[in-house]
Length: 510
Image (cartoon, rainbow, N blue to C red; front, side, top):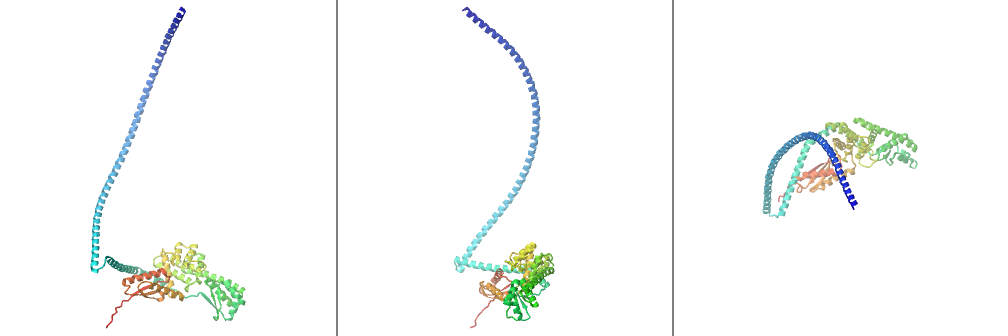
């Protein structure tokens, strides 16, 4: 037991001694830590003070910089604000002026509206009053009065339209006819040309009728060989000392004529000789074609034509239209176009060029489908002619609308050349049909009693019924007939329409 007590006492004493030693060591460590902490805190304070001073300096610099930027920005904004204020002030002034103008216009419109309303009321009242008067005076119903009023208005419109047409025609003729007649008369006087009708068949004189048998040959071999080579029809009939060559192609007909004349002159007629003479005739006619084209270009002063156009132009020497030689006609149209262009103060060379080439398509229209104006325009375009020349060729018969002065000049020159006395001849059937068509167009109109086409179709005289057509309506009738003739018929030159109204007073003595 005592041992246990001493053991307890020893343990307690050891614990106490250990606690004391531990407190002593702890106090020593605490003092050192406190001293180190004080040193660290002092260093930290010094660094913090240094950093504080640097931050304060930097903040002052940054604040000064921001202040300067803000001041500059404020100044710029103030300038923009002042500019915006000026613009707003100007717009306000403009709006004020517009508002004043609109107020004035509104006032004016309201005033006009009031006047219009008053006039409408006056017109309505006048119309009602007129209707009442018509009913009272004429004893007609409103429908009958309306019909009567419409008839009156129709008559007034007819008279007014006739007066307008008459005035327009008078003004136009007063200004245009004098100048046009002067230009055309000068052109015709300066371009004098002779015309002679040409046939579409060639008659060849032979020394005697005995030669006809040799031309036919044994069993017709000579005539067959001739027709196969030349592409023509050889007509041998009872006409004394004459054979006839017929062909739609004038160049082939000319080759056949030259071949037959050479055979008759030589006297030796057989297939081999026919072939030999045919070759010579082809060379001769081609040479004449080339020379004719070159001569036409030389006569008109046009020297830069394509060789193919020159050859095609030369073929017109053997082409006829209504009995008129087409090459001579083309030359005359060229001269007329050039003279009229000069009188108008234009360059005559393009007009002469277009006039010379305007019927170019007639040289090849047997080989192609279509109007000769369109064919000639395509040919000229293919060989490099200028667009204005091509259009004048295409427009000279109205296949396209004319849009240049040259187009109109070529149309006028073509009409003048074709309409000259003796320039053309028509077949009797075509001539009679044209006159009948003129009379038929005029007779189809209301109020026409009789119609006569005179002066070879250059003038149409229309007799009207005086009780149906009055003076004003006769002017309108002449205009309508002329317009219908223009739209439905083709003719050279112009057709004069004369409406004759005869008034008769008849009475009887009893």
